[in-house]
Image (tube, rainbow, N blue to C red; front, side, top):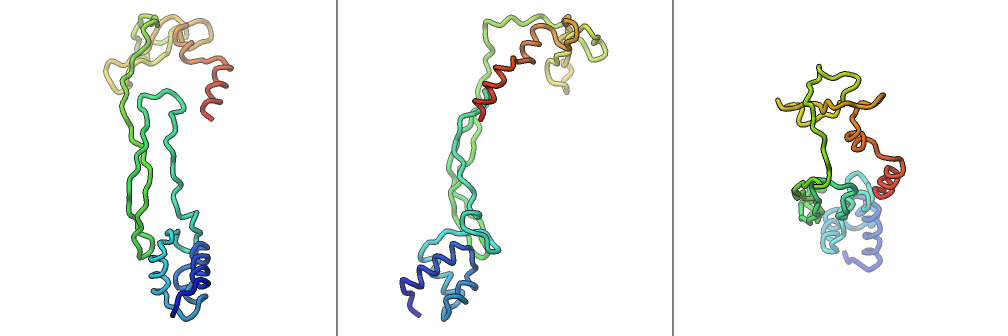
Length: 178
């Protein structure tokens, strides 16, 4: 059986539509499933999802390395890695991008004045004390700020500025994230 240009084009079209090698062999006629698989391999046609999916649905979309949306304690780096995966009875190699985390050192601003905490426990909090948590709740040194808080606020003046952002700043932050 000769592979004419016309039959090769039909093979490529049917392959990209997601038909199986057996279905393509039946439509082409006079060719076996293995002959179709061999020709697909020699033409280096891309793999695709099982059960009749199309070629674009099978491929994982490539992710690009984007800048972090908000300041984080780790920056992301994208690296390319070749992996093999099974597609039916065929092993496919594809390059994917993976995110690698790089630790960054946190340096607090030097011009900020932090009020001295009263280091209250949960049972010592009242309506007029700051309920800002400090530290890891699973550690023994965990406590709450405990400074005096203004009326109808769970936090002292300092922690209010950390907890509540003006509406305009929230909108700008949301716009930058999108």
